[in-house]
Length: 328
Picture 1 (cartoon, one colour):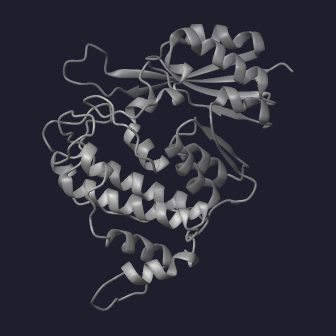
Picture 2 (cartoon, one colour; picture 1 turned 135 degrees about the vertical axis):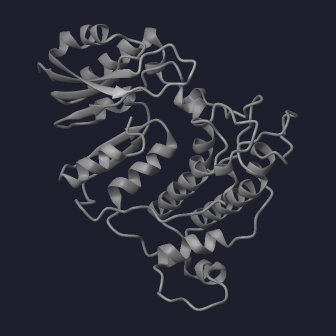
Picture 3 (cartoon, rainbow, N blue to C red; picture 1 turned 60 degrees about the vertical axis):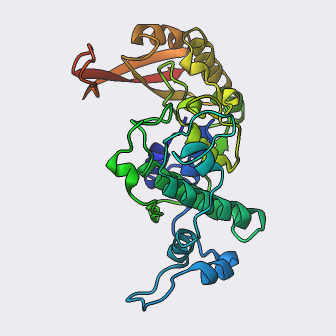
């Protein structure tokens, strides 16, 4: 459940060898960028593409790297009316006959179509490496997220286009850390319960979903960018078929079994588990699930709660870190 890869990156910078796991494909790409790069790649195989579509006219004050040249070339591509324009822009015509969706302006949706199409062609043609492909997909996901017309997740779009969403799509270079080794790390995509038995480690940090809201449904557009596919967009919200990424941690009756599987199957004696008082389980219930495996210690941290004006919840939120030392 490595998410954006922030914790993985911090562990790498501190000298740890990291195995990062998530069921979401976009998290897989984020983690690869966080762990496996110490400098921008050279995009040697795409030199002709960069030359053809790079900067046009004028003189440069400073030379750019191959990575910057690649982002510039992708940004210069002519807009295309493709899948994102059809399914996720107000000018589109969804294939399932639903009304047009307003996730992106028509202009930005066309830019996304052009960029994602080029990345796919370059990858399938062997002009970019797998790691270069992950980096470019990471950059596209971040750029699209910056101009998405949403309230926070992609469960639905906003009916009125906000000013932020009107800004033109812009591909920005990722921040690539030069601190820490890039060798010895592993990035996996799959369910934590299913890959646990294949992992041996000194410390396992788990940051699970804790509400019933499924990540696969609520971040479906980012997942489509990461998978480079064009699935059927279902319903008014245009969700991709997402049941193949259903998380047991979002179902109260299944959370316990998943925690037990991970702790039992992984070759690890120390677990740190992040949880919240807003979780489907109370902290006492979670402790009772983990206690049979060994000694548990809970630390609580208070944070300011994000809340709408109509929310009856308090202004503070307790987040928990559970330290489990397993008896093996």
